Length: 146
Image 1 (cartoon, rainbow, N blue to C red):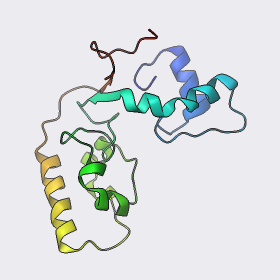
Image 2 (image 1 turned 90 degrees about the horizontal axis):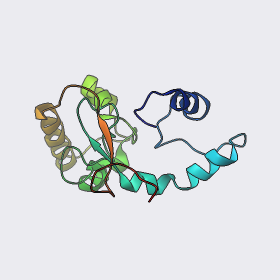
Image 3 (image 1 turned 180 degrees about the vertical axis):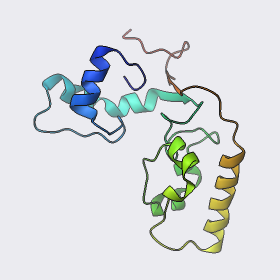
Image 4 (image 1 turned 120 degrees about the vertical axis):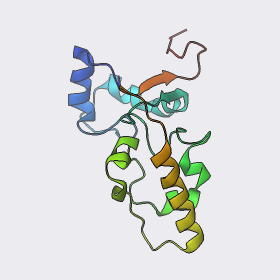
């Protein structure tokens, strides 16, 4: 759904997602019953979702574990709490680091932590092509209805 580009995926993206990602879409009154039911299990999906990062288009900067073994929101919870854009994607940050702003001035320890993260981002070895969304709850990394 996030990456595939078949007819039904395009229809669902147009009707329900618009310009949002699956992470920040919410229930609306005119949603179909099926879409409403899918949104009820969205959190389960997000728990099993993993990303093999290439260009960063499908990888959330703060909430996916891509730079370190844990997501940045867990490694730097104070920075995450102060950040104005919590659902920004990695490619957006790569293209414009200044897109991330904070609600207040950062004291020296937080500023140093943020500079370390930015340094690690600048030296991260991105691949060619698009990110691959994987299902981490299966050994073959593919979703199944078993």
